[in-house]
Length: 184
Image (tube, rainbow, N blue to C red; front, side, top):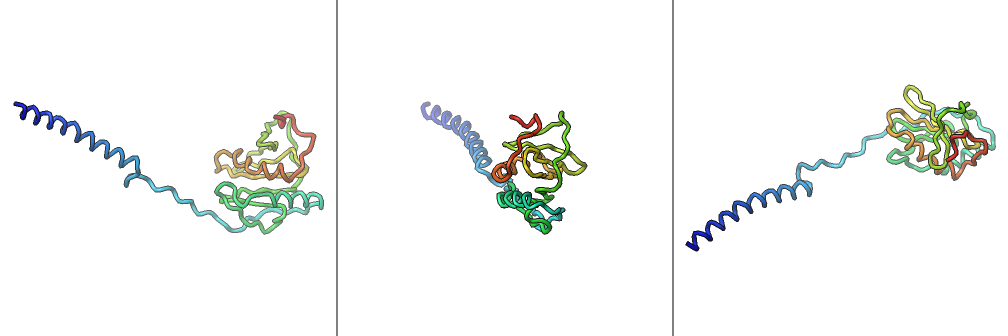
């Protein structure tokens, strides 16, 4: 009889242990990344060719400020590489595909309605002018006009513009007469 009890206990243990072991193996396989694991997405190819931009003549003072800004800009904007700009490389920069261009010293500051929304982003006050395919973000608290044009296909446009705030702060002096919404 003891032999019968031992065999029954062994069968019961096997019936319980076998599915538990199989389930544990399947879970471990999935967690550790078996064949069902998706490979990391490879970066998409981006254009690296030159970006055409207008290059108006700059006053000597504006040209000096713009050269300092361009020297402070990074080689990449997140995963977007800096692209060559044949016209006005001392005042223009562009990143990625579709390009996110930055123009320094191009024209006067835009006229801003007192009730317009302005965005103080990481120490720089930006005014956004939405267009059909792009939104032009202009720094309205600096001694020269700085405009970053972000294609509408980029999500979180303000986050892309913030990437430029550090170089702007470090190289372009601010003005005292800023729109009221620019104050933190």
